[in-house]
Length: 413
Image (cartoon, rainbow, N blue to C red):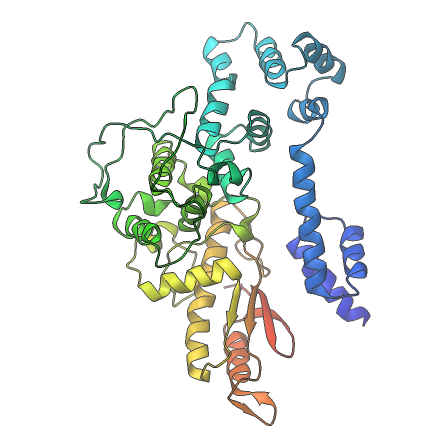
């Protein structure tokens, strides 16, 4: 029992590296050593922490934003600036950079950047500001964070989306032939200073992501036919479509901004990576360092895209009703996709490429059950699946009806 608990604790430490051992133990104790329930408890606490961050006391927020300044100085400026957080920040930063090059002062000026974030997300000014500083004062990283975490999404669903920006065609880029998926990119995507809500009667009130939805079909055309858009995390673009309630024009506007700022990598680089995405890849046949660019420009079949959607939306493979050879075939593709993405994220984030446990993706659940093809109570599918997982050196946690794959042994060669 103790060994089993240690194993469960080890798994939780891999999934929640920022949590203390005491909090992980408390979660396990509260869940009566049920790992799945403990995971739910920890995820719930994580979401609660996020809510607390968004509603933090203004002065505490300022202390966090400007840790190098003394609290009494911050309080003084806060009082002098009518207890306005944005005005206090500007005043402190201007004072801090006083006498330096004016271009440096302009770089610190937050108002235009906050307006750009609000333009693409319609979050409140206070939320935009908090998340802007939380994401190292990077506009694209903040927008990606807001959309991936569905912050303030109800505003967008109620059609308060900012008006799409119109621009000129870009020269020298791969252009589209027809429809939204074939629209030319504008040369500049800077929004107006004041976001303008608008109502588009063609936007569905409650868009639900579906592979057969016209908007999704058009989005897939973008991914398959335009090399520049394909550099953006496809799962992030799906999140955008959800966030903007099926408004593909708005998704395209944001894609243009990201490409224009050469910030496509930021659509992959998020803390909540288990929610954040997949990319179009070909299953690799030999162990090598993942080649992010070349792989994503490779031809992709519709079945592969659907499999990737399944993997990174649910992190679950269910082989009930499968023949053994069918299960092994799909498992092989899924494991390649899952581990390739793990390796690409390690490369992008400068993490150890030789670690065994996955650190950038959620564990993959493989359900085998007993199904229709069992012998003496032992599933043939389960036997074949386990043998295949072992042959590829993946590490996993075993249960009677499923496996949880959480890493892969990397040879020292």
